[in-house]
Length: 166
Ligand SMILES: CC(C)(COP(=O)(O)OP(=O)(O)OC[C@H]1O[C@@H](n2cnc3c(N)ncnc32)[C@H](O)[C@@H]1OP(=O)(O)O)[C@@H](O)C(=O)NCCC(=O)NCCS
Image 1 (cartoon, rainbow, N blue to C red):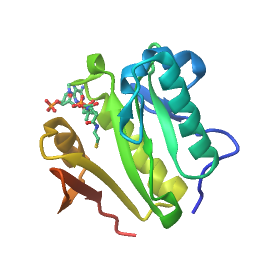
Image 2 (cartoon, protein in one colour):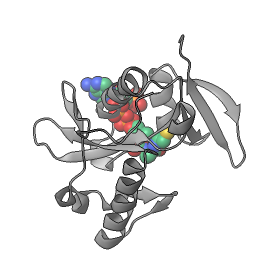
Image 3 (cartoon, rainbow, N blue to C red):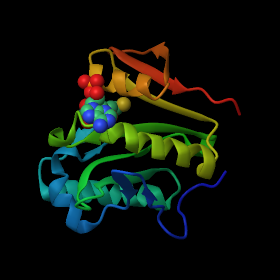
């Protein structure tokens, strides 16, 4: 296992998007997609505090949270990362796009980079994601990435897993 934090924050380049560290200057664009413990930020100050907490979790080895940057503009269009389970060799993958960047394939590309990093750099043996039965876009995304539904949880939540042959 190669857990965070890393000497250099991992930046990963894809064709249309890249995964990179979120900087203070990015946060004003990300207020509506800033969450911590499922609470959504409504102000710049709240979003900044949440990103500070997420950074602390990264330095404590618990998470890795990337900004998804559009390669043409270097602007952050969404976020993704591993938020739980790393200490047990597993990773809960989460993601969110700003609404204006949905429906263009950006998250599929971002998740492929995050999954590859999780398996080949962190050494994860299991990757899972939790969504709800109503979240058709998330279900479609996960199934496109070969995740398989493994459990119905309370409150209409469902768990998907990416099975590894490792
Ligand atoms: C879940 C979420 C990230 C999915 O976003 P998305 O835009 O559907 O996903 P992608 O960026 O991969 O785009 C895929 C869509 O773009 C379309 N698309 C258009 N051009 C494309 C291209 N060049 N390449 C690939 N896909 C393209 C695909 O057909 C697909 O649309 P469809 O679902 O109608 O078939 C988004 O709905 C979101 O942020 N939701 C709120 C947070 C959330 O629910 N997170 C999930 C937690 S598990």
